[in-house]
Image 1: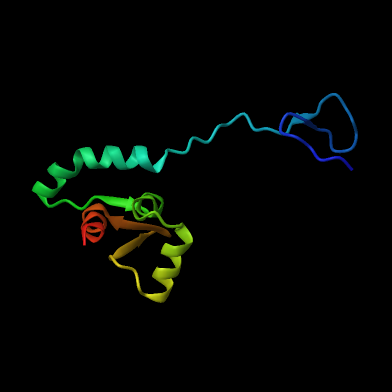
Image 2: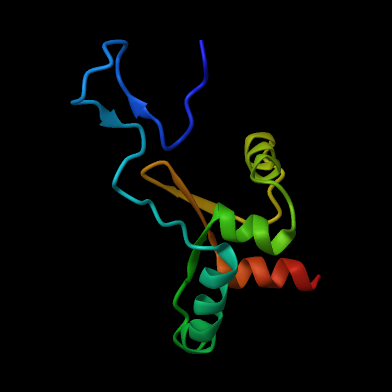
Length: 105
């Protein structure tokens, strides 16, 4: 049996002409953590002045710390996370101000 490549057609073993392409027409765009971080850093002075928390996800925090997401998950599980976090509907969020302060020390 040969393996399919992304451009191959799914034929379901019949070889009929009404096959469906293996690739989906929908494109999922992932935003680079560096781009998200730059956008948040532009807003940071205003948020600090107004004392507004700026939540970041674990991808951005892992990018800041230069560690793997699995490391963050392990720290949360063990209770040794260097900064507090919150879970919102299963998504983990850290505060940007806390993350930057922990990197300074």
